[in-house]
Length: 220
Image (cartoon, rainbow, N blue to C red; front, side, top):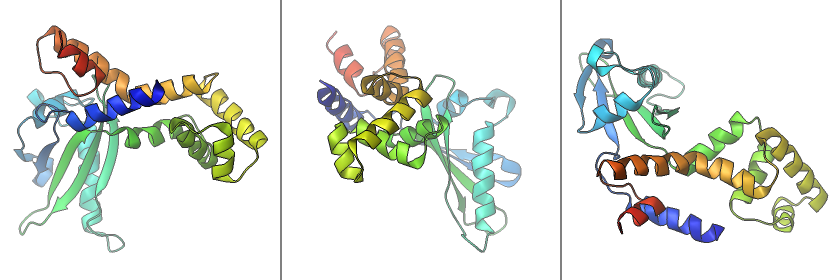
């Protein structure tokens, strides 16, 4: 059942329609004033914490990413490095912000791209938030992939008892009791907000986003 759910969600990801939830881009010029914006990016900006487009106040996350991107453009160590940040929006979704400096003759300009966060970007963040060590994170990733205790021991070249000890520590740190609870806690940190969002979309007759909820809603 777990494998079927994972496959269904992956199919939903690949079929997720472009539109309101497609990536958006904003180009900032002198004084971090917006110079241009792609269609739909305003919705992303409104959903980010502490921003207020009506008052011409950009979200702190956008300004922070833009600032890091601008600094990287003048760094001799690693010039033009793409700045990245993961942010939890007001609606409960995770998004990724990318900032990159643009070539300009008379002034510095930075482009910030906002897009939905893929689960692979969220799991490491959540695991770090729980204070898991590198080894515990490695083991957790194998649990999420459906590895058994013996499989994990073989993959990491450690004993079964050591695996069980790591699992005990992981369960304690994340506040769960079983592998199933662990998978649910991390996996649905990304997908549960998506399902709630589809419920709101269905109630207002808006297009549903890809995934099991969308597949269900399309047959109503």
